[in-house]
Image (cartoon, rainbow, N blue to C red; front, side, top):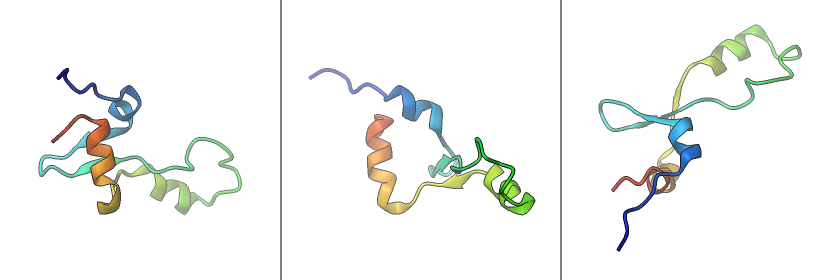
Length: 65
């Protein structure tokens, strides 16, 4: 059976932490920023973690076990 290929889009969007969690960026930070408050934009800057319900799908895209 051939090797699983990593999804190139997922490779750019997700990173692994040292403890094995999957980090992700927040949405809604790319455009139409004038109507968003400074606090909202600041909080969207930081990395979040992938929810438990989505971990299996992301790991499959990243070709992880």
